[in-house]
Amino acid sequence: MLDDDQIVGRAYDARLMRRLLRYVRPYRRVVATAVGVLLVASAADLVGPLLYRVAIDRYIAPQAAGARALSPAADARGLAGVAALYLAILGAGFAARWLQSNLMQYVGQRVMADLRVEMFGHLQTLSLGFFSRTPVGRLVTRLTNDVDALNELITSGVVAIFGDIATLVGITTIMLWMNWRLALAAFVVLPAVFAVTERFRRRSRGAYRAVRTRLARLNAFLNEHLMGMTVTQLFTQERRSRARFDELNASLLDANLISTRNFSQFYPIIQVLGAIGVAVLVWYGGGQVVRSAATLGVLVATIQYAERFFDPLRDLADKFNILQAAMASSERIFRVLDEPVTVEDPPAPAPLPRGRGRLEFRDVWFAYDDDETWALRGVTFAIQPGESVAIVGHTGAGKTSILNLLTRFYDPQRGQVLIDGVDVRRVAQRELRRRIGLVLQDVFLFAGTVESNIRLGNADLSAEDIRRAAERVGAHRFIEALPGGYGAVLQERGAGLSVGQKQLIAFARALAADPEILLVLDEATSSVDAETETLIRRAMATALRGRTSITIAHRLSTVQHADRILVLHHGRLAEEGRHADLLRRNGIYAKLYRLQFEVEARSAR
Image: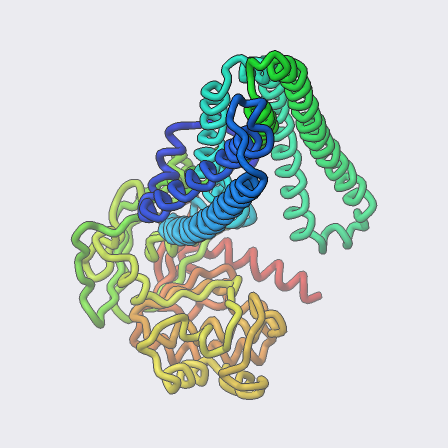
């Protein structure tokens, strides 16, 4: 499958452009105003050479134009009037361009903000399966760099093209109107200009593709090796990593130099062709003036227009690159926005009964990514309100899949998952997850205060609720010792806190909202010292009383006092019962128990 970081796409894709224009549509009046003032600015640029013609043929050299000479005073007044009009038009053109730039910058920034909000909102609706197969760095790039590329198209591309085209059409029309013979003499180099422009377009497209591809490779390498810096240093691979980075960096440098060389050749060639056109015009037009077939003012004005004719052509070549970058970025952005939402709220969500917490799996079959490699196979069990259940099994037996289905991070392909008799697919995800507390091994803390990390935006929780939850899990003592207590500011991912302290905050977070159902992975206490673990176990015993709970157990010593133990094997429910009953049965659980304690005994020697 093609890596979407390397997608370049077509230079222009009407389908993508229509989708992009949807985000501009709310600001169409502002865009229309910007187009209008840009056309005014283009018109102002076209008036200048006409005023040169008037000044020369009427006031400076009227005899050559066959006009009656005026008095020196009248000529001076006339020239002053032309100069004043020229300055006024120049000022109007400047004001129009300033207004157009401000308007389009406003539209570009608003479109970027709208698009980022829509993308972030859509990402929040996607299942965990999408994030498990999509690198986070790639998504961040979509929300930042790719959206910025669209901003450049909006502010400097689409509307500016109207101005360039209007300028070209206006110059061509005026030149043909003034003297079509002089116009054709100036346009004699146009075939060469178009040939050079087409060559530049083809080469710049290939150069752009090479830059994007090599930049994607460099970014992927950086992301991987910065995240894996511990392993690199541990195995002393710095020299090899640096050599590989140097290789990728040199490849990107070569691609950029080729692209730069293409630009550096294009502009001087266009400038030379423009100079040749002007030279032809001077030679031919001078002869026309000498033979009185054209006036000096017309020749000067035509030369001015000929020189200005090539500026929009150079500008359009720049716009081609902007357009190409925007098409590639928009394709990557819309790939994210088109990612299907696999876990959706029903049109009419059913309410969950309050205060019970009965869980049931009915013949549940589940596979990640629908690949028919079943993580769960026909699993059926029920957990009564207030019952404490542990789920054990080999790695890959399907234990974590149980939690993923209960919290509706995924939906099963077959069967039903019910809470208090209601299929979780009929319940709004927000309501479902507010009734469930989840404690994982890998605790994620956000940048912010300790209190905000326990609260997590739940406005219903008072400061006393948060303090009480922290006290129940034994976190209150160390939180109070932090500078600022519950107002202490944590860095990203809780940097500065020990693993045990993060775990205690995670337990406080799970219990603060007083959920009816509590789901715990027993590794959540595996990284803390013995004293902290004892404290957590004691607090959890109090917190779980009268509450439905599931513990995903890897250390069997932590589940011996559970009301019931479910044993999963290759995705099926193989055994269930209390600890002593399962040992007497001498089945899978008994084998796991003996194997684990043999390993622990050997480790203790």
